[in-house]
Every structure is written in structure tokens, then in C-alpha cells.
Length: 297
Image 1 (cartoon, helix red, strand yellow):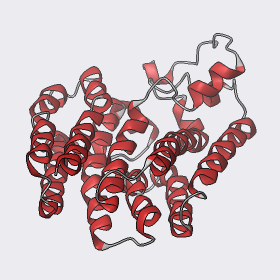
Image 2 (image 1 turned 180 degrees about the horizontal axis):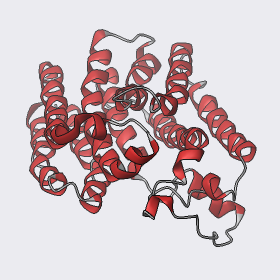
Image 3 (image 1 turned 180 degrees about the vertical axis):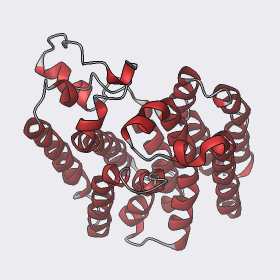
């Protein structure tokens, strides 16, 4: 009998608070950090510098809340599959410690809080936020039929970019969509690393992922997506003349690519998971370069 076919162990009794925190991945900040950095880059670019404390608070807190709600949506959609995956079999919905209804109420509450935040900005931002939520709801179900569902996740995880522009200017210019496209490369890269962790289990249960679709080209595709993101970002932001801080941040991000290659080239679970969980540092370096470029320019 394989590991993925083993029955679930009896869960250790946990408090409701502990279960809710587990449901929203509270102890795994990498999940919201990868969303935060491209959103803040867009916020700074749209504002031509520091956007003010109000918008900064809205987008930092909103990113955390929407990522948490996204985890709930994903777990509700995947609860029948997660029991067969080594990494996810102890999630509260999978073990039965939380009901679907209870989890749905948590997700709705988080979404309502995020909506309350965005309502303090422009109505255009509210409209784009509604579309972003729709994409996030659809994403988990695309794993049933799309060969690369990470493409949909890339849109969902990059939607903070047009929302940021809409909140600042009331408009979403071509630059915003191009930045979204650039960040999709980043999402495809790190979520393929994530999918490489579960590839054996996903093959068994029939889930479709980029790691399965790319096959033996998975490592090359990950590195190519990272490179495409960095190159497109450089091309889009170079006209802003942000000077040496931006290019230093860009180089620090690019310098991490050989490390990612070393982590995933053997396709071992531990290395691939480390690569994913540290991928937010690329975005952090890019944001630091943008923010310092505006501050010192």
C-alpha cells in the first residue's frame, strides 16, 4: 500500500482557533508574501512613489485577508482530493475537524472584511476586486480539466496589480496589464515548484498540474518563467528611470535563480518545497528596488 492510500490517522484534538488558523495557513506567510510584493510594486508605480498610509494599509491587510479566503475556497474545492496527498491530508476539512459550512462562513467573513477595506478606495477598485474574487473561486476547479491550471492561478495571484492602479487612478492602463503578465511568469514558476512536491500524489488521484504537464521539462520551464518575469519587469520599469536602486534590487532577484535551480533540479520534495517557500524573496528584492528608486530619485 502506498503512502497516499493509507487511512488518515486520528487527528489530535485542536481548539477552534487553532483549526481556523490552520485553515487559513496563518503559520505560512510565504503564501501572502508572494501576493503582496507585486501588488506593492503596482501601488508604488501607480502612485509615482509612496502611495500614502491609507492605501498601504488597505493593500497589505487586503492581501492577507484575500489570501486567507483563497485558502478556504481551495480547501473546500479540494477536500475529497486532499486526503490522498501526503502534504495535505491533515488539513481541518480533510480530517473532518471542520465542516464545509463552517469553513464557508470563515471564507465569507474574510472576504467581507477585504471588501470593507477596498470600499474605502475608489469604486473602480471595488469592481475589479469583484472580478478578482471570481477568478479565485474558479481556480481550484480548473485543476480537473486544464493542463496548466497555474495559468489561472497566475491571473488570480496577480490581480492586485490592476486593483492597485484602479484604487490610485481610477483607471487600469496597459502598463498594469503588462505587469500582471510579468507576474504571471513568477506565479507559474513558484507554483510549479510547489506542484513538483505533490506530483506523485497528483498523478495517482488525477489532478492536473503544470509539474505533470511539463514532464521532464519542468525544471527548464520553471527557470524560463522566472527569467521571463524578470526580463519583462525590467523592460516595463526601465523607462521610469528609477536608477541604481531598482537595478540593484533586480540583480539581487536574478541572483537567486541559480539557487532555485540547485534546489529543484533533483526534483526531491524537500528541495522543491524550500524553493517555493523562499520564492517571495525575488518579489521582495524587486519591490525594494522600486520603492528605493522612487524615494531617492
